[in-house]
Image 1: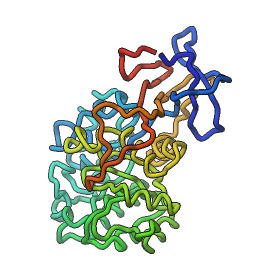
Image 2 (image 1 turned 120 degrees about the vertical axis):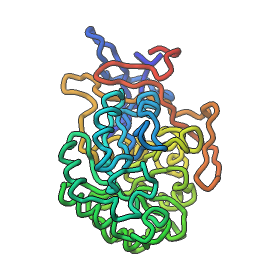
Image 3 (image 1 turned 60 degrees about the horizontal axis):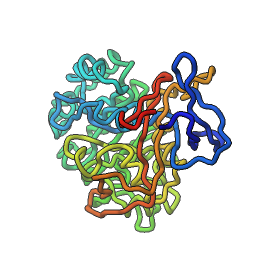
Image 4 (image 1 turned 90 degrees about the vertical axis):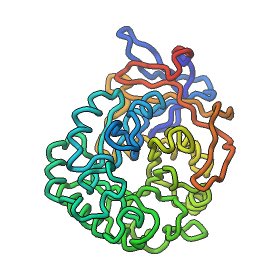
Length: 368
């Protein structure tokens, strides 16, 4: 049961303890509580900035609701599964059928991730068609996705990123740029990014990553951060290292956002869901307040969905209730992409969500 229990509130405001109360119309409000909180916490509803939820179209997509409210996540952003030629289907069939809210980073490759080397051929990039697709779906498109690493772009080098940057600037939207193995060289990638653009897979440990052994950024990344470029975790199947993340965080370079890059190849193991990834960053030394900011206010700002979580009349509009516990969740292993396994000191476990004032337990057997 969570109604009436003292909850530690974690948001951008002052530290405080509150309790969820049901009003006469059945909606939830937060009231101050003077009792010391236990494990239970509440925050604005979580956001996963990098997912793959174009179920049925790509070979890697998962159903949006498999990584949505049942894991404490209120909003997911699909990261380039759809391009200009396939975005209509995502908008028409997948998004309306989902309970979780979905936004889309449109791929600069016209067919999105139907083809896993989507930008290796210039014939698969159409600038004008991509701009037209964005204009048709301004309500769901949050930016332009470019995967800028050697296994994907091949001989195209920087061209997909250069064309993606052109589209993003014309559309007035940010870039989400996948970084990985060269070519192109990481400094050439980073030098093309501007204020508000996001690099995902920021803590990968592949050859040519942008970090020094002491956790400080290489010069190109330092320049990019000074320009306002943002760091996103984007865990994925091959793109997160405990060691790289821990060193960077200790050196003062935490992620701006925490995301999963969840897809069919990692949802059943390694990534699982957003709270698992959040727990991993917690174990790397990121304070819980920063972990929560990285899945709430910061991704909402990037996605331009800054809705307050508590309305002016006190109604809780969107929230995630969770436990910060020392008890390991069952059947859960905390491992990075290189196979390094950790036993975190604390775990983030979602308990319930509140949507438009209505609370729903994540495990229906526990009640509210």
